[in-house]
Amino acid sequence: MRVNVLLIAGAWYVAAALLFLTLGARGDWGFILAFRGQKLLALTVVAAAVAVSTMVFQTITANRILTPAIMGFDALYVLIQTMLVFTLGGAGAFALKGMPMFALETALMIGAAGILFGIMLRRSEDLNRMVLTGIVLGILLRSLSGLLSRLIDPSEYAYVMASSYAQFTNVEGDLLWAATGITITVLALVMLHARRLDVIALGRDNAMILGLEHRREAQRLMVLVTLLVAVSTALVGPIVFFGLLVSAIAYQVAGTWRHATLLPLSALIGAGMLVVCQTLFERVLDLQSNVLVVVEAVGGLVFILLLIRRART
Image (cartoon, rainbow, N blue to C red):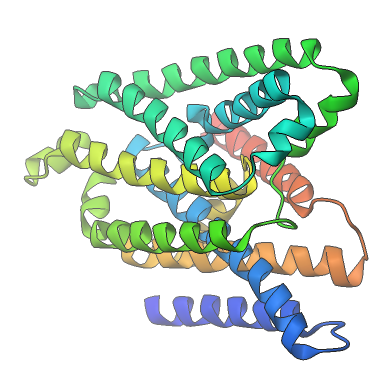
């Protein structure tokens, strides 16, 4: 059953990728495949990072309606962009794009998460407090971004708005390869923890009875989650509800609670879904809007439905 599900998900992704690369293609195939291939890689890397980080985060927190975005990563990213536009102006902030900016944004998000985890995960029972603290920090960061936005020249506020949503159109090759290398490495490390995640899913007390050091494993996995979220956010921008949508689908179709299946399954489902949506927007509907706006809206509806289902049970 596990192999069949993964094979179907793999075929789903391959079909989506081939459709994205070939649909409506005219002219020099070498140029077309190189151009579309870079965007395909960006879609795949970001989708896999967001899907797997959400799945791991839900397992650690024992809550399937949470995503790593609740820790305020998206709010911190938007605040960084707002501060840059406020201090340097729109043109100055845009000129900083590149590897130094990517490294700075990733380092700031990892540093902020490290401080939060170091303070709140000294004891295993502080997981709920950590989540609540992340929510409060996210509200604070959004408030600061809103304050600075009101002080920015209206003509330059467009730069802030453009940075508030994930963009796949202008991903630089150097950044993409760096993000791909980091993401593949972290995903491999997460897969090595798949059996430990199965034990963590049983609950803190049961995990400790089975000999697992729950606090230490939670800290290690939170570091990996932070790396995935920080890299994907620094590469294309903030993504909030997409991971929630993918994890909900993965749990429904997996037929198992083993993370050796759930993790790659969620990555394949997420990558295929994002590629298909991008193909429909660009090739079929001929729209230039950001596809993640629609995907995030659907993810938000799934979040509301999960809340309603939990309230009824």
